[in-house]
Length: 310
Image (cartoon, rainbow, N blue to C red; front, top):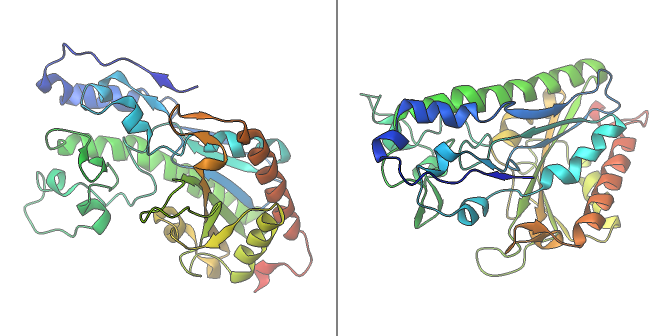
């Protein structure tokens, strides 16, 4: 269950932006992530859910004027619950316990909010398009006109969140990938997300979108196999449209080194009541189908002529 710790309306703005409040935020996440790593994994497939964290500490809520419902709108709500049961079959599983509005681990640690970076940098610095839009490693907004903070977030807050949340998550993920590749000679990361039912133009998104950075993050046969299996369950599956994969997919997906990465985006309509932010009756069927699909996908890697030899 997600936890809502009510906002303390009596705290002054200086208190909410103090370094002590920054520490209160990161200290609320103990542990930073949930990791299930079998000593002897049964498959080279690793499942990760970077955006399903749903704990909102009081110290963070005191910094924003946005409602909890607005903040939660960008969660990949309950995606961790869909894939966690596969750990019982010997799959490695990793999920961030903190929400993406606090720290987004699907962004590079260098994608600082420009206004915060300017506080500590006397020289010109590069700004990614995502950071410029307020959607960097520490997001500044949840939508174009919905700023999380009224003022610039102090640089010390950004640095602390990266050090205490972003770095540990990626250290854990790198460790899982290295351990898996040592055992199997290869690793396949499935980075699991959810997406809005409708796209920017109002058209319905596919049931599932698989992204591999247009072929850069995994072998074509790998993603085609997963797509075919999912289509066998009756899902409309598209490749790289409109999501080709974020930082995690691009950073870890290096098929020439034996590590592949695929971003999975699931249409929220399939399992979530977006008004109540609770799973609806479709959740059970979706979870059962996706777990079966991943088990079938894993079976493909047991073939002698495996795709890792491409």
